[in-house]
Image (tube, rainbow, N blue to C red):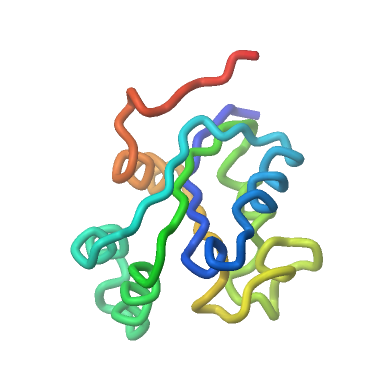
Length: 143
C-alpha cells in the first residue's frame, strides 16, 4: 500500500458543533497523520473556485452559501491509502446511507450539512491540497 495525502475539511456545521477534536481523533485512531491544518473563513469567490467542478449542478449555490456560513478547518492527512481510509471514516455523503460509526452517520444532519469533506481521488487530492496549502505548509511527520 502506498503512502498518500488527501485533503479533509471540517465543514461549518462540524466546527459549530465543536466536533474538530472528535474528527481528528478518528483520523488519528485510523492511522492517519495530520501534516497541515488551519481554520479559515472561506469567502464567496474562494468557495466558488473550490467547488467549481459542481458549478452546473442544482445544489452549487446552496453548497457555496453553506461553506461560507462559518469557519472551516482544512487539513492534509497522510498515511497508507489515505484517500480511501478517510472516505471510510467519513461515511457516505447521505448520513442515512452512511455506515454506523462513521462521522456522517454519527453527526451529520443532512446531505447538505454532513460535517466533513474529503478528496475523492489522487488527482483531486493534489489539486485540493494545493488550493489551500503551499508545499512549505506541509510538515511531514517522521516520528
